[in-house]
Amino acid sequence: MKKYSLRRSGSSQFVTSINLETPEVYWAEGWNNPDALTLPAETIAIAAAAVIQEIDGSHCEVEEMEVGL
Image (cartoon, rainbow, N blue to C red; front, side):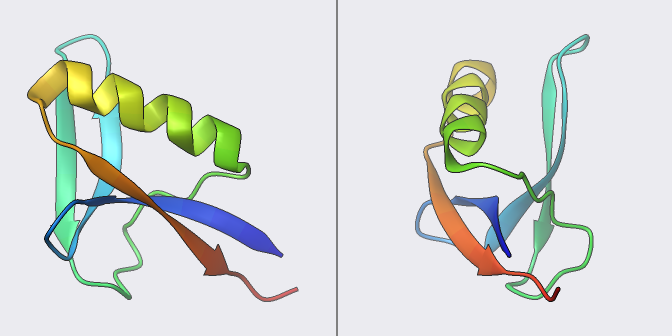
């Protein structure tokens, strides 16, 4: 099963959450960080990346992750 995470371009920081009320983006270090947010569809991840860029100016790479059955 594929899921998608968002990585800050040029780093190994991954989005853990997005707070639209404040607005803030929270990041965690590491490719295998269990706190990294995973999204069920690539289209959702792309839309979230656009929101992140609006909030803090970060460009995100959408990373495809294989998740066990």
